[in-house]
Structure formats: structure tokens, C-alpha cells
Length: 234
Image 1 (cartoon, rainbow, N blue to C red):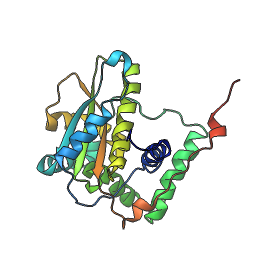
Image 2 (cartoon, rainbow, N blue to C red):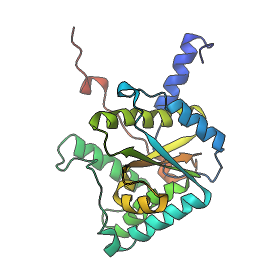
Image 3 (spheres, rainbow, N blue to C red):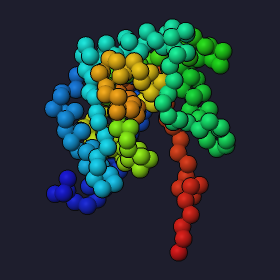
Image 4 (cartoon, one colour):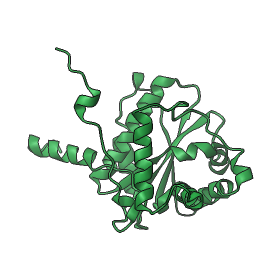
């Protein structure tokens, strides 16, 4: 990268960032372990307060990925069992206000519109949400955990690490989907992966080659203009 002209370096970095999207359907194309290791090694250059590097990663492929997916789906598809599972931390606000609720509703109905899922199609909504737990059929699934002793600053650092993974994946022609949905079933994940009591599930992530023919992957999300969220002080 450093040997490229400045404009080409900028274009390559910008392309990796701006082409990142949450992919919800993957091809079965394998991703070599060496490639996963490269992505994680690059991502680990993320900054963290006093370099404590708060991330811990569980990589799932093959039979291990299927076992975890099957265990979570068994709980998810049983209403009585699902009711016994809840998140350990609030990812979303407890009270929704504009503009956040408007953006949330838009992406939800844009996706369901593409998939021809109506507002009363509860079974179809349930099935679509359940695809999270199969990592949207990606060949590689990640479960990210953090030590419970760490504080809010480490969670901010963790976000930069996750973004690095997604951008590094794009640089290699791969796609991802970060998934907070896994946090509801942290007790199942703990059991299946043998997590220590000190490990708290942050989120999951799917990694692989996007299925170009999948309707769900036609979703394009909007971003607010810079002037909507920025004040320049001089």
C-alpha cells in the first residue's frame, strides 16, 4: 500500500470503507483459515486505551458453526424457551425518539419490502430474523467476547476493532454482517463454546462471499449528510 501513489492509496482505503455493507446471504465459498488470520491480524492494529486490546474472538467454521447455529435456533424457534433468554446489555435505547426510530423503521421495512414480507407476516419475520443464527449461511462465523471487568472505554475500543475486521474483509473481496442478535442467546453460546464466567458476548459476525443473486443483498441503506451531524468551529 505504501508504494502506491497517494491518490491510489486514498481510493483503495475509501473503497474498502464505502463498499462495506451488512450482507444477509452468502455463497458457500470457503474462506481459508490463513485469510481469516490475516484479517484478524490487521484488525488488531485498532487503538485501545493504554493498549489493553480488550477483544477476544471465537472463529466458527464447519461442524462447529453448525452446532452453535442449531443450538441457538432450537431455543429461538421454541416460544417458551425463547422467553427465557434475554440480552445482558442494552444495545438499543429503551425509549425510541426521532430521528433514530425513523431510521430503524426505514431499514426494517426496506428489507421486508424487498423480501415481500408484510407487516402482518409474523412467521416470515420470525424466519428472516432467525437467519441471523445461521450466520446467513456464511462459511465463517465470529463470536466476540469481552472480559466483564472492563469498562465503557473498552467497548468503544472494541467497536474500532470490529470495524477494522469489516474493512479488512472488503479489501480482500469478502463481505460481513455484524450481528447483535446473538446477544440474546449468550447462555447458549456460553454452553456451546465453553466460555469462561468472565467472558461477556459482545456480538456475532458473518464472513464470506456475498451471494449476488440474493434479494436481501439488494438493500441499500442511506446515510445522513455531513451537515446533518457536524458543526464546524473556527
